[in-house]
Length: 419
Image (cartoon, rainbow, N blue to C red; front, side, top):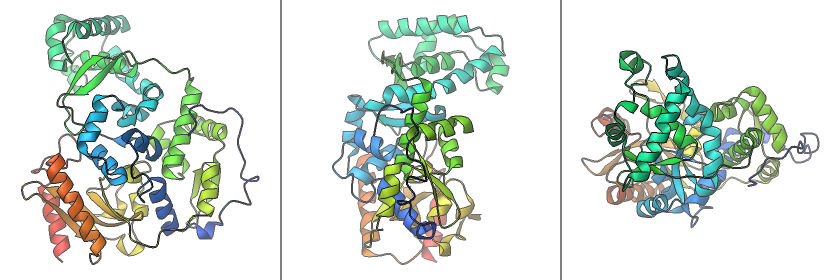
């Protein structure tokens, strides 16, 4: 991938017409297998390091869950210990980026990844401003945070910082609590992090435990302007997904329609009609790749988190169910009608063939397969079950997930799987 945006419009649909696959050939089955391939879930990323996985397959959504670890294990066989070592050495890191959401990124993406998330970091200050907090007060607090971290012998968590800074951290009372801003400290920390002046460090070094301290960083800014950063994000996004609709692109980036269209023009993105009438935007090289693509014949089984990039980048889990499985329900909810998966997915070449949750009390994967288990499916479930038990201990979806909170889902999957 390039690391700069172009200003000239790339190949047009007319100049690529001879390469465009005919819409009737771009069936849901082919498009599922194509996305699977672009995500490196077909074995093409085996042996890659963690940073390369995130660069080529997409940043991993974190939210205090285990998805980043499974992202690396499924695609490249990377252990939790290696992933944690890469976090410690800053080869990968969790940062606020697109839409202000936290993802785990590779090192070459740190600076411009922060750049595209900077506007979201400013948004909380607008809430404070309506409660009478002036920008100068936050700037002073930022300086005091930097001084406290410079004097500290190690990372400081928010509670320690609040104790050290005393009255410099303003309590915003009940009004602030109602608006999600109990004090001025989180806003100042968010602004400093978005500027790369500080970074958030997992207290125990693990990505699936949402307890953090802060330390000084001083990451240099990129030389990119915002237009170039937006174009690069859309270039990466279309590469990660193998093609996305305009609506999906807007959801992931949070950009306006005007910004999306300008970025598409800058990177030469191409419109590709599909068999179901949907239009995907794709990078020119991927258009040719898709035209020559043959879906794998043999099973390729992976267990993925519900927030895996294959699912989350486009929020299109409904497209990943076979027609015969679209009406299946768990706890009264039709799976194909939900924007996000309520459970983790068992997937074969891009098609969801079952759901799973981890049951730590019994050190097992509770699962529901929509069809009969094949040897490949049984083997992969056992491999991931052993990996979770030995390396993670549990598999949380997000920071507040717990065995007790997911027990109903475990029971529901067990019940469905026994029918």
